[in-house]
Length: 394
Image (cartoon, rainbow, N blue to C red; front, side):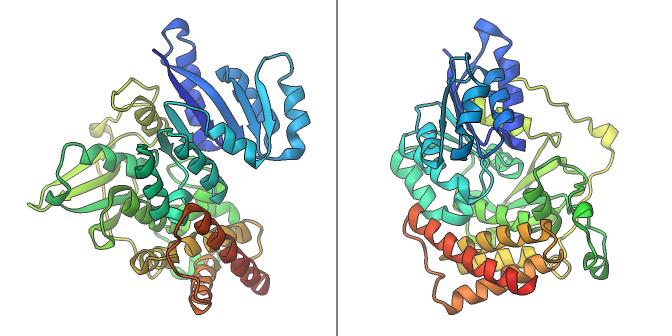
């Protein structure tokens, strides 16, 4: 029997990797394991139409209402249903499926993913903001609906595998690894002069611009600590980070008896995506396999929070709790967009985030969001604060 799948954010880097897996599966014909119900995108009409055709999707939805006619024309004669608008994206997410791949970048992915959960769909989660912006409310909703959240991020996917069959009480800590980004060895003085082009050149992973900049500042690892807290219900003091430039070990769990267990694999997002699609089974993927003898050496080091204050700021927001991580995420999105738009410098990103957190605290905004909707409202307020600060700094 075929499993049904929908992809939210089908034209982004995660969506493209998922589409590659599903397209390869579709070539099996009658032996295919998956059937695609819906694919969505924000504004990329041609790319969305192409992936809908490749996967034989039942429906294609574009968030930009003004792109409806262009998408309708691009898919004319295919029999693929077409819709547009944010509400239509949420409706597509609510179509009954065995796996909903949540790969929309940013807070725009929170409402559609929540709609999918309310419909009872198990989620392969690649959207960080669901957990960083609305983590407590999001996980409570998943528990209420009896929905499984399977993490796509390589680090959390690794922990999901490592925790299987183990009593959490036997575990001392969870350790996420980080490549260190392109500036791991740069001095503080050099970091002040980083260009957009340099920051977009990640040494290991091929990702979208937002997450690539987050990796360069190490904010990405701070955001992942917040995700791990919500996904696995471990307190902040039991979460840690190690810099691992080779990106072959994705995470460790450390037992109370001192044993370390790690998950290794090639740095290819198709591997954790395939794990989520096939879970609890495992299936062969097109990714390369590790040759440890060829790699030879795996190295690890502690992150430098003086040169990379974004990680410190994220850890402090996690420890504080309440709405701090919602504000952190919103301010970071605005700051990264400002850097990519050449309005602020690289090191101004964490500085702006910290200033917005302080402003939100003074305004009494750092209370715990009671629901996904109140989290999104706080996200909007934090963005207003961040955009005002960005205008002042530019």
